[in-house]
Length: 244
Ligand SMILES: O=C(O)CCC(=O)C(=O)O
Ligand SMILES: [Fe+2]
Image (cartoon, rainbow, N blue to C red; front, side, top):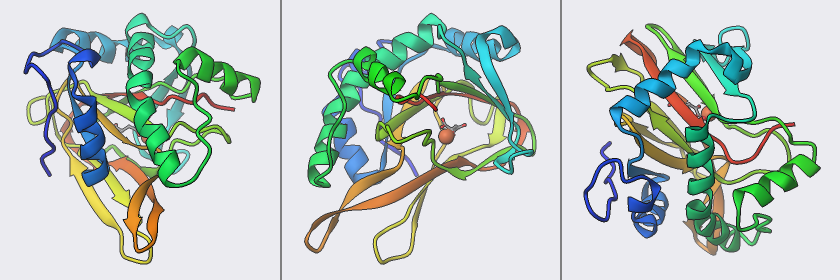
């Protein structure tokens, strides 16, 4: 599918402030996912992809085949996060917060998220969720990511962002980002998105409100990546709650 890109000025590289966040919220309601304008230029994307070769930046490496998560590898950053990753995480959080709160209100759930990422991470850390969750993924031919949810404890921020770091069709083939939404009392809906380099895709971490006969109900959402057929694909994943 093609998702609309929401920029207020059409400019590239203007970062988080250039996005029309109200439009992102509407697109999330309609599609369950929404693209931001470009957040990182090509050079920044290459630099971040290159972080993968610096094991000192990471707390752990996951062999996806070994855990039956798919095939390929990803690495969780350690604290302190590289400045660009920490900056994006802190800048995106307050933009997604109104959407998170609105969703909680629709679902009549508590909205435990404070105004700043630092305060929210403080709550996570007090609850024992102390390990950083931003991650860098590297896929080669034959690699894929099974449908999953990035839940690491009771404390959950309901939205997350993935940034594609390569150019689809040039750097790699295949490797579409996939979402599957389980609809209440109905068959599931699938959506695939080819991540445009440097743009963020905002999507649902656990479940999202969908209209039902009597108001709203929560539709569980899983995400994954289809098999990369050629080349190499990197993605930066930004999750806002930390892990136990
Ligand atoms: O590689 C991707 O596009 C998805 C990675 C992922 O699972 C995530 O960012 O949580
Ligand atoms: Fe994920």
